[in-house]
Length: 89
Image (cartoon, rainbow, N blue to C red):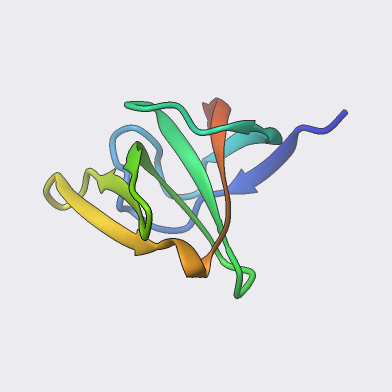
């Protein structure tokens, strides 16, 4: 009952998740290292990335497209990071 669905708009996680597809997540399930996650930002936006780790100031994630690269997102801007349950078309 707490599962939410997010429709994907961008290409940053192709081929893991395709634009127009969806992912499910539960805001009570924290992100897991090396797995896809939904990042909820304090401004109300969302992103889907691969969770790597967290330090005292940043959430460190990876995007896959157009090339795999690590990103740092300031924790002060993050509302939450949640494990992806299912993904599909």
